Amino acid sequence: MELRGNWRIPTEILAGPGRIAELPGRVKADGIARVLVVTDPGVAGLPFLTSILDGLKAAGITPALFKDVHPDPQLADILAGAAAYKAHNAEAIIAIGGGSGLDCGKSIGLAVSTSRPLWDFEITLTGPALDTPIPPIFAVPTTAGTGSEVGRATVVIDTEKRRKYILLHAQMLPRLVILDPELTYGLPPNVTAWTGMDALAHCLEAYYGDFYHPIADGIAIEGMRLVKENLQLAVNEPKNTTARMNMQAAASMGATAFQKALGAIHSLSHPIGARFHAHHGLTNAVLMPYVLAFNRPLIEDKIAYAAQALGIPGGFDGFQNWILELRTALKIPHTIDQLKVTPDALEDLAAEAVADPNTPDNPRTATQADMLRILQAAMAGTFTGLSS
Image 1: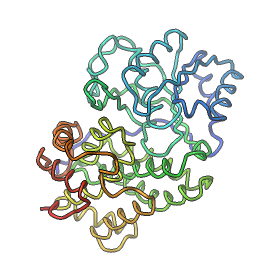
Image 2: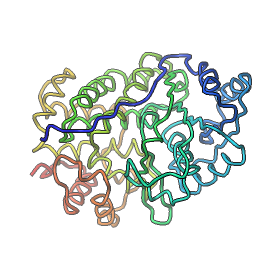
Image 3: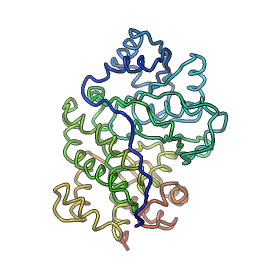
């Protein structure tokens, strides 16, 4: 491993119950008078969204609400949001929701700042050049999984190609993040579980990525510990403020850590989500132990260390068993056919996975044949032969 790296740590975060009340004052302090609030239809119908809008108005800020966001943001969503931003003469964006609402809001910020096709910004931190700077973005997550609130990237679906694009620009990093656990109280148990497993996948892949980034490693280990100690509590006790707060922290930590790397869990998850519309966190959770087994020859010692740090006996095997037991406790399916993946799709999914931008960062080189082997194992529910 080369002792060299470029390290980025995210933005200002206000963490704690009730902190959402500080949002209007922070927006006003930046001299902003007109904002576009971006969220999804589900969040738009919740009482706290009305309270946020009322608080902005009381502070002398004029909000416009854009809520036409699909569960996986599509290009049409982004373009419609950009039109709404311009029609409102907005000066900033407040993105509220899960990964979809946050990614859509950040992508709208990119869209209003360039005349180029958004696909030109796939995984490129510095270019192409923008026409104007991306407007200030304020991020308020209402789930605990994606960590998009502390990221410079967004995921957008090209519906024509049935492909997920990862768009990247440094200015999409939100100016301010509010982690208020009270906004997650209403999450259904299954969504709490799926998003929490997404946070775990981010921490895990970041941790075992083969790059020199000890800061990310430390964040990822602590993020995994928070998931281990709090995810089941958050699922079983929806208003457990400590568990909800710790899961929000784990989500932001996972996205902070994965500036180092992601890997084949995400490479395989993206095409499955694009083709079969499976929830991203759920898909990550199903694939996780299969990719872990595939990567074992190169990560066994690192995972053994992580197991020790998390208080899990048994080294690599103990860690993998913990993943399997956690999935069972959270009612996560064991095989991808339960995500409606069909056997005839595996060849195409493998081809798309090997082309995913996260694949080169997987610690073990994964060819198309390897991706197919992992998918076949995940279809059959067996780990036999994956480590060889």
